[in-house]
Each structure stands twice: as structure tokens, then as C-alpha cells.
Length: 400
Image (tube, rainbow, N blue to C red):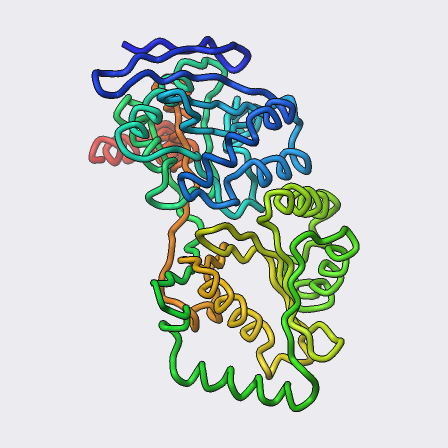
């Protein structure tokens, strides 16, 4: 049997594993102060496990600074063989679920989160670490629902909830987005999945624009706040700022701007944040905010000048970014967001994401699971039929 730390407010605990699994040491860290303590080790863990910057300390720091109360952040860490082997960022709080009050334990993310997952080593050590993490969270008695937002298929979080299922917890899954990505093989340019007609269109558009003025790509690795504000204004001037369902940052309130300012500062310090601008002469016609590491490029935000829409400036910028990623030896170009029709011109590869919900095997947990995933609606409908349907209702309910 494994022993674990007392709870979110507790200190260090040790978990004994089976022979060959080694010893896993768990420790919760609290708030942004705790995050700063483990950030250097966490960054090294992300690098060693090829975890994207979307999961690292800079992203979580920015999210908590913009959207959360710092004192509700719990970073549950696991050490194996003396080194940091996993980090699970969680936020405690209260919420409602189908009108029912819930003590919520959730991944540090929200509806604006592009991706959430644990950062964890792989192999037998990873299995031991995930099991130990689950035993610790299951031992905490202060939550009715565990929610993990935008988790990628096949990731550590998806494996982690399988342990919860085996332990008798109810797990629900809501499919969300399917993210396009380009897998770039050695010696490839990243354009291999594009059609001949699409590449011909890009050549035509480039020639037409270059007939007007020189076309060049600007790269800024450590943008100042003024550069970010310029991107926000540029994005808001296009359809994202005008359409009813537009997602321009300036429409999302000051929290979104603070998030990106914090992200730029933190990720730039780790040499991961980058702003690109496609310029026609002195005029910016497309721009993007992205994250990159040794393994991949992640397209976080992009926009373009619609007066040049017939020349596909957004596609031309993407082409330049894909070539740059391939030239730097990166093996993946990740579009990060929901798949749109225009992204289908670049790749057929998709990474499904889902919101994962875990409920404890208690009466309250079963009630909340039913409320969230539909069973409660059917049960209440049958109760109404039984109470109000007379013989017809009774026979109907009995038949079911």
C-alpha cells in the first residue's frame, strides 16, 4: 500500500512502489511563490520530456496571474530517482454544475486555454509517478469534481484518468477541439501535405505582392509591451474584432491582455516567445504570436490585413513560419486552436482534445456525474412519469 501526504495544505509525503518502481516523493507547492521555487526544474523537465511551452511554468504563471487567485493554486510535484518527474498544476475553488454547488479541483486553465496536461516522464517511472499522483489526489477529501480542460488524446492526463477509472471513480469525457498540426520529417520542408494548386496560389500571391513592394519577415523574440499592443490593435481591426463570434483579444477584457503580457515576459525569458510580422514595404500585412522550443513551433495567435485578403497574407506568413521551423530542425508545426477550413489546406493531421471530469465513488459523486452526463435527466423524467402518469405511467416505467 502507498502512503501519501495529508492534503493540499500538507507537506511532503513518500509513496513506496512495487519492486522496480522505485520510490516516489510527492510535495505540494502553493501559489505563485511555490511556482517560482520549482520553475527552473520544471523547465528542465519540460525540455527533457519534450512537453510544449503550453504546459510549462511561463504559461501557468500567466494564467494564474490573469485569471485566478494565487492562493488557490496547488502544484503537486513528484520526484523519482532524485529528480523532478512530474508536475500537476491544479486550482481549488467552488463552482456550480447543473445548478448544484460543487467543490471543484481543476487543472489550471479556462475556456481560453489552448492545451492542458501533466508534465511527466514516460516509461515505467512515469507509470509509478502517475499512480502516486492519483493516490495523493484521491486521498484529498476537499473536492467533489476534478476537471481537466483541453487535454490532448494520448497525453499523461488521459492516462492518469484511466487509473481513476480502475479505482472506481466515474470519469466523463467531453470532446472539444481537434487541433491541426504538421509533422515535419527529417529533410522535409513541411509543405508535403499541401496540394500543387495551393502552392501555385502562394507563388502567385507572393509575386503579386512583391510587384508592389519588397516582402519580408520580421522576427522579435523579446517584444516590448508596445509591440504587443500593436498586435492587439492590428487583430481588432480585422474580422476578429468585428464579427459577432470574433475572438480578438481586445474584446476579451483586461484579463486576456494581462495574460499575454505575462506570457510574453515569462516565455521570452526562456527564449520561447516570438512575434512574427509579414511586411509589405513598411506596412504589416500579417502578424502572429507564437511559442517555440527545440522540438516544435506553436501558433498561438494570428491575424492579417483584410485589404490584402485576395493575396492570402495569412497563408504566406504561415508558409514562412513552416519553412523556418523546418529549417531550424523542429519536427512539428502546431496550429494550437480549433481546426478551420483554411488549415485543412496545410495538413490532414489532427490531435483531438477533451475536457475530462472525475467524480468520487460517493453518493454525491454519482449524483454530480449523472447531472453532468445526462443520467439524472432521464431519472427525473421517469420519476415525473411515475408520479403523474397513473396506470399508464406505471406500466410505461415498468416496461422500461
